[in-house]
Image 1 (spheres, helix red, strand yellow):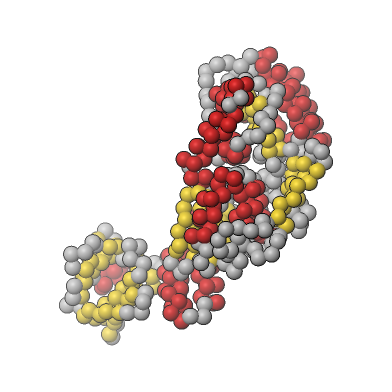
Image 2 (cartoon, helix red, strand yellow):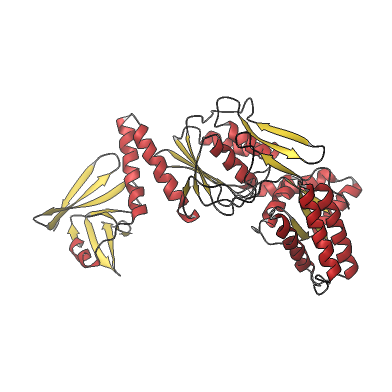
Length: 445
């Protein structure tokens, strides 16, 4: 039974994602049947590891005692499938600790790769293999854009090691450097390396900040993580930050969220996170099984505790599917309140009105739809299948979405809205409204 001296970021992140159920439990499923002798060897090894390595010694011993007891009582006798056995052990261990970082996995091909590389002295080649996997997934960075109203949006699904992922993170944050607000989407982020958390968080502070510490059971030591003394590019110390969370936001993603929340540097919008605050190492049990063993615990310098088992509570609790819309509206409302340049203020107000309309979903009485139809110069309004459509000359036909009484917007044209003008209660014209303040009017034919 042994562990690698240096486990790649890919493997560490993989541990978190599999343990938390974000990706399938096993990467390799075979029809081979596990024998009783191997079950006993696996259980004995797990009991020893948990007793000697788990962050809380008493809980580790209790977990080891439970699986030994279950083995002796015959609980595992009927199971012959490797994956099922791993899942049973995982469930039993978690029933004691409630630690979702713990996971026993059947993964013979991955173990064979690790052992072969170590035996042949080709660990650098194996690291290159893992690094290529990370590169092909852009180090988990998925979406980066600047939304109307100068609000940045960054979605990434894992914290890879800063030594490899740092340039990608730096490029992303430098691209967003001049935004007035930033929405960071961690709804599918399963965690990873504290080094990238440290790097990215540094962009949000002027002065040194103590972010987090990890107490490590082995050696009875504590490792502190502070913001870095320097990062390349422009810092975002005055940018309003909104972090989107879900029940799948886990581990390192929770640390990032918890740190910024406790430092009062971000507003958290979404769901309570998964509740995993223990750093974890992978141990190879035998040729078929590995286990993730949490060896330490996070200690926040402000609260002197962490989010293990409870998760991080959002400041604004909404379903994860609604979190973006809510955060975006909040960001625009704050921008409108603080913006001093009139032209920029008008742009923000235009965008905010559109977002409010989408969020509030104004319902138009179907019985009144027909009165909007007709020809208005080059503009034609038609009613089809219970919806109004707008077309100008030979341009594409677009569905009209009611914004409020007599005002409509279009998903395809964020810069344009259509207002109906009435006289004595009857529609007599339409007015095109543009985000730069211009308008154009057409009488009804």
